[in-house]
Length: 264
Image (cartoon, rainbow, N blue to C red; front, side):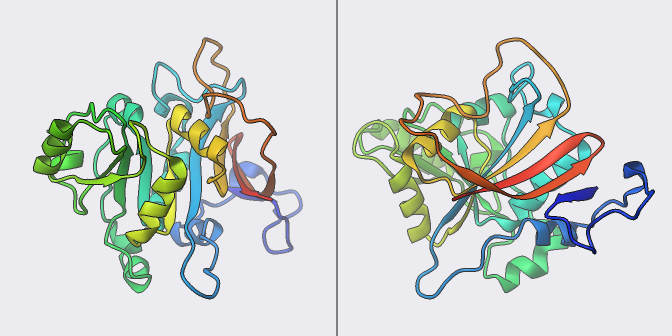
């Protein structure tokens, strides 16, 4: 792993050193590189970051899953971002396609999470208007931290009852059938979850972008070409004016680029 931006005397590779010779970063170094912004004075404000992977030709998945276009280092960053978050926000379709499981507590981050007042593992928050989910999955029946299900006020009462019976905590974050992203972020913050991470999918990320609640994008560029008709990292209606983000960090390993952008 090597840092391409910002470059300092400490992070620049030695003259003549090959990229392949770059040492693997420790989890502590990754955690420092991806640390959430320090909270300002007053009540902590929510900070929502997204973590996504895309091929060179813009595909967010291959055969319906992101794993084929990922890499071992990408998964280490994936795990680090989870370990830094209070809650992981994910769309219902991604839960169904990717076989989501509860986030696990990791010994390497236990001390840091305890010091930050976090639960041993982040909670998972599933965005679902219809509540058409398999509530018999371990994600709902056996998480170390109760899984949250964010839905609208018009959600079917019988599906809410099924979710709660399975052990999920249902949070109303919309007046109608769907979920309002702004209210979802506010509701999570009111529950004490201010370090938010979303792992998509594309439709959810598109909604977060359009609503203006996304603060940061951690995007892995995979040096692969897949063609086909796979979705981009964000889908749905386009925004009236493109959202401008600035590059704050860029890492590289074996042709994979690990970028980090923040809203300007």
